[in-house]
Length: 168
Image 1 (cartoon, helix red, strand yellow):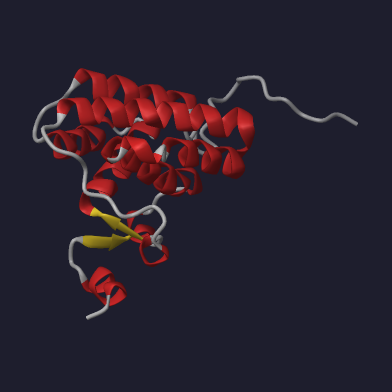
Image 2 (cartoon, one colour; image 1 turned 60 degrees about the vertical axis):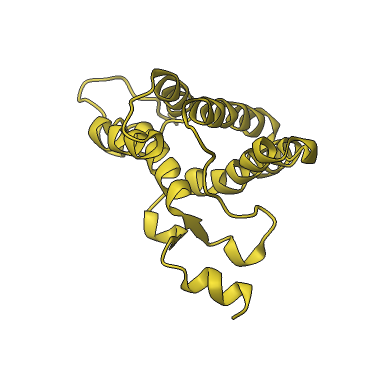
């Protein structure tokens, strides 16, 4: 059995498109994997790849801030766990559309935090931390979620609030 076959048939892997993430959250996956690689093998300096990918994807202002916020979440999570996080090799072409269960939980946590879905975010935090609601993980996740929130859905603006319009 080839590595590609093993990866694609492994029930522990999910297709990233099955998670219903937005484009920003999906874009965090390779950055996340490089940060995890950096923690696993510090001499690789994979964190440099993480920042480069983020800057290329979203530009320096947004990308570098997003990568920094994500690194804070990763660091907080790893500090409260006894082991690492199961993740795919960030350079493996065969796993770009796939996520491990723990990568999926991490991305779901951020997805729900960005949408202020407290109960669902709490479940994802508990899944990642082994049943604990670690305040450092929550604080770092909410900081990223606040900085890169999804905003209010279209049409949800309260009536009577001023709107910016082009006149003329």
